[in-house]
Amino acid sequence: MAPNNKNTNHSSPKQQRGSALWSNIFNKTSSHTETTIAILRRIPLFKGMRKPELLEFERLMHRRDYREDETVFFEGEPGVGMYIVQEGSVIICKNDGDGQREILAELSKGEFFGELALLDESPRSATAVARDESKVLGLFRPDLLELIERKPRLGNKMLFQLALMIGDRLKRTNDDLQSSRDQLEKSKLIT
Image 1 (cartoon, one colour):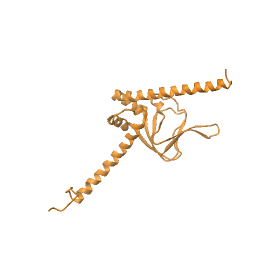
Image 2 (cartoon, rainbow, N blue to C red):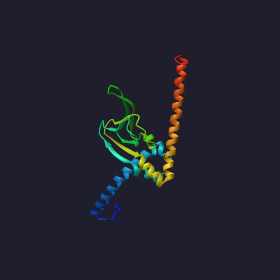
Image 3 (cartoon, one colour):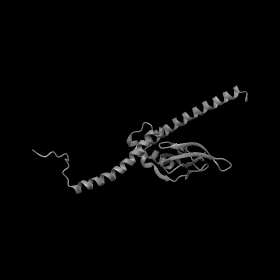
């Protein structure tokens, strides 16, 4: 009777170590890519995209590490693209006249900001600052325009999602303005 050997791999220990080494190298790359893909799947701009489409966008992403309190972009700068928080957190703020920050939003892993800069280079309406050590992905307008030339269907698919998102925000803003107006009229502050 043959001994019960659970290890069916008949390679030498040296070969096993070598393949494990290569396996670990490739797993790190794959794990990093999967993490980026997983984040992109949660962002409305990439809604309904298949993995090969997401991989196209993953290749366009610029990665940057920010130190605590390091500025991602300043209010008034021309917008160059959108950002996605991969790790850490980023605050969106405005500076008041006394040099103090008024925090408008705090964004964490998987949240995005600055997406309107994909459409034009209008000045930023606020400042973005890393609240703590953070990893941020950037998708910049020139890269998106190049993708649209190369793969128009894919680029337009993303832009369509951006248009839907902007339209939804505009509807909510209109509802909020109407609600505020109604409250002011009830209080007889305006006529």
